[in-house]
Image (tube, rainbow, N blue to C red; front, side, top):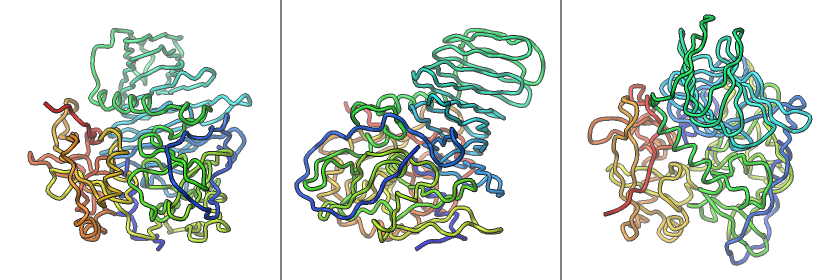
Length: 511
């Protein structure tokens, strides 16, 4: 079933789950056999972006939680944003009561906090293949963490100031209508304006007035930001999980972190080495749910709701093996925005959704596809356990929250679902009433919940398409959104509860 109008709740549900070349070609079903662990094939050594003008790139909206919007230049202004949306040159991204993360090709990232707006004046590629990125901070707080890639250019503009980052730089910029502050955690940056150029090194801060010619003042960086802890947690996740060696090398690191956490490769007899998500049975269909997003310069882009759903829908091929189901294999080149031309090839995937016609005036530029019930892992209604459901394929499972998902996935395959104790606590950080997750995942404490799986999913099928906040026993609400695994029970987010960073699950040590 494909829906257009009246699908805002569905869009928000997919949106708030928190994840250039030839795309996946869905191959004909082939024979299968026993599965054993395997290493991944080699990734390509370059990643051109063929969709759009030569040298123009897209980047990934890799995390969304709360109220986040993207202006895709569709003449509709700002529209709902969600994980895995492509971000292109000249587009604007803004948060209200929400947070967002953008991932670049080499595993560099930027993050924005509530009430922030940024623009991407330049997302280009030089003739030599280096990336050229310019981000304009209009208001709010921006974090940037660059990989150590040499040759790439990354610039942030703020009023009359131009901030040039070096490889491995890690910074925060806070800006309002009258003044701004640059904090450097690692590396060094050059700040240039009409008065000259100032170098700001590691553990230094620069305070300046973005609207006047007052000289900047360099000082020691001693004042922590309200979202520093969240920024560091997400940066550590990227650094830990983006391991190109596991894929045989290559320079394309788009989404590898999420592939490594939410799934693994195995040898499937007759199919070869294939990547499959954890918590997915042979009946799992990667094309059953998603969103068609319209981009005037390139057409429709297929956007997957799954936290790992960037790389496998812009690169490689999906194959179906009888008895084992769908699996993904790297290979070929990357595809930019118009990934449906080969990814959802009708000749190879008769059941895959087809792109709708170009929207006309008054029609939505976001079209939801919901061909089967969407399984979601989430907090239980009693709020004291987290339930992993079969065929949720990681949907609803927070990043790096429950350790190795492989064992949990094996339990789900056997019982239909697995529950683990969980509790909600208030982390150190911004005083905005946000909560953080903490999960007790001790061996032997998991319990099967297969009998309630179908009843749970059917009773919440409409709720799974909703964006809701989970309220703790203290009466405080965590930000609504998939990435925190919140129990979906209301049709809209709670604006008062979404001011903090994304809910983050962890597995504390047991005494």
